[in-house]
Length: 133
Image (cartoon, rainbow, N blue to C red; front, top):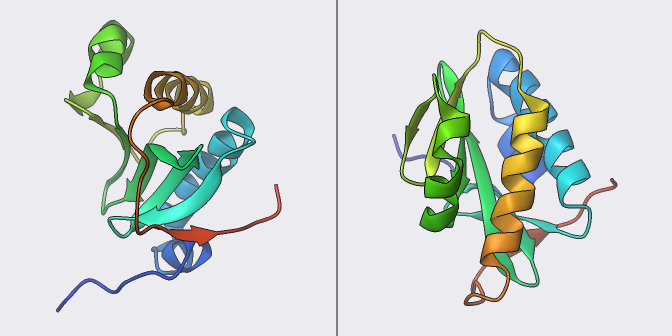
């Protein structure tokens, strides 16, 4: 069965199982606090945050974890020591659903990624979503 395409972040979250949605709601809130000027969008069928038209961080929910996707590999190398004990590979950091969402880590990763990416190439073909913050 093909993965459904989500029109916006609200539709993406609504399609998630309750336990995944609960974690992602917290991630979304942390992203909003970290990147208040960012535009929420769907990129690669997952929520993404754009700053000056550039995707700086995305997130997605899975069966037993959620993941943050950071654009900058340089950033990933810089913060590697902060990710000890996490399942992480270049540009992807996974967090288990059975533990509290580390909102301060999510916020810091989003802020660092935004500062590392702004000034790079603009993202084309992104569906923008608006929401109240």
